[in-house]
Length: 70
Ligand SMILES: [Zn+2]
View 1 (cartoon, protein in one colour):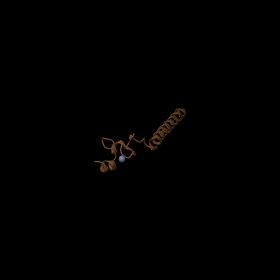
View 2 (cartoon, rainbow, N blue to C red):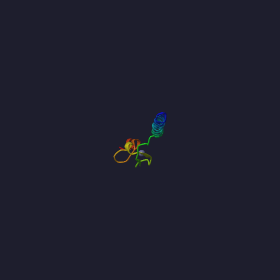
View 3 (cartoon, protein in one colour):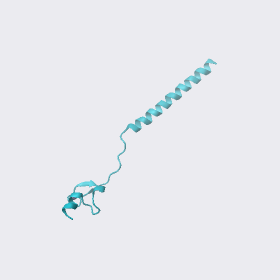
View 4 (cartoon, rainbow, N blue to C red):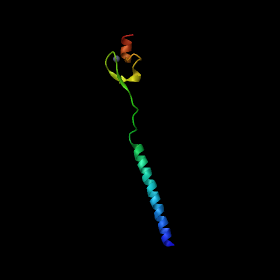
């Protein structure tokens, strides 16, 4: 009977260690730097500066060039 209890105890400890290991693994992967969203960079048609596409006007000019040349 005592052997059965010992085996059960060892199994429980092993299961807890396994759970702790899985939690540690997932915590490690989550604590890493999050993948940055892809940002497309385009060249301004006016000054030639590389800027994110969102900041360029529909014709491919940055804000400064848009103000200089309407
Ligand atoms: Zn520009």
